[in-house]
Image (tube, rainbow, N blue to C red; front, side, top):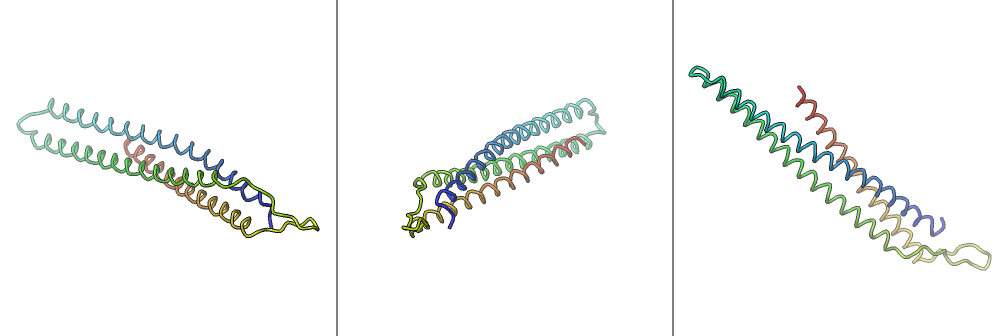
Length: 172
């Protein structure tokens, strides 16, 4: 059986790695929020520009063109509002995943300090049921935390891909 400290040390390493990735995800979420705000501002500016352009070109025969431009602008505003709602939902999901990682890390920190298993007269470790249970619990918590972190990473990658796609489309 591996030494008692190996499982706890591994869980500690996983928690440290998760903290580093969590900080990277926080930075990514902040930049995603800033990008969403920039897109909202760009959509509002486009709407205002189209309305102004429509007003300057207005004539009795161009009423239909103005109406079409107004409808297109309203559609873009609705799209920007939908994207903002999606961004809020994504931030909420990221927050929930972050809370799960925090809870898992807190549980890992709450584990009792690692102690060696009792040794027999010949020097070999005798693993007690309590020792084996503590080790299994630490390993399980570490696996749960790693899974939560993988889910956060996948979600962040999908959000980044979505934002990149929107940026490319807005540059056209």
